[in-house]
Length: 310
Ligand code: DON
Image (cartoon, rainbow, N blue to C red; front, side, top):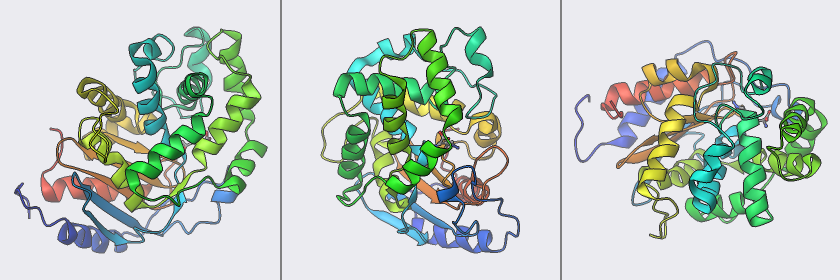
């Protein structure tokens, strides 16, 4: 392995990665601030690669459903951009925050405009705007994920959503604070309900790798229709690269070299534009909320295959 060939043996690469990961002792800790997530085994591991034609390769627990959490922020961003285009960027920035995903600190001195759509504050703005345009932001997301994964059984996990709502003071604070600047249109409790349901969608590595091929195909959906312009798909990929793993985005870009987006359920999606999309899952997180084995596996993938954007 090492050279990029037109007929990459993804299955062989994935099996090699799984063997390496199995030898890794430290795996981090499952998120416990949402009690319903704390029960997952931090050592569970699965990984899938989806090619642009929908062929999927996988290893480990690649068909096991898990809580997608912040990975969904990519798809709500894509949906909102498709609806309103550049106007979104007047309400949310596109700079790395250098702060934790749930931080409030920049919001006051930046007048209620969040740094980017992938920290919680920015994702709340995106969901709010998508809800205003569609009347059902979480439902739009679920429909998109079902269609792009080809899995009609994808659904919300209402137990996870309720668990998050019960521990949602920080997200509520973010929502109310931005509302005080006029940057939230809907009533905050309604927005939080949409956001928590969005985060609760359960899907497998196979489902999310397939869904992420939308971005590898430069905005073209699985059915051949276009959701995003090529330029918008580039924008989403670029923001994933610079902001998708929070205050670890620099290290992720250095190690992996691909646009990627993590969630505290332990999932990470990554995109090789024009080539394939990946999803890896392992619930053990580092202190910044990124899957330890997930980042290591993506690092190995780009090292073994030479497939990166650089
Ligand atoms: O807003 C929250 O706290 C979560 N539901 C989503 C956070 C998340 O996945 C952040 N990612 N690493």
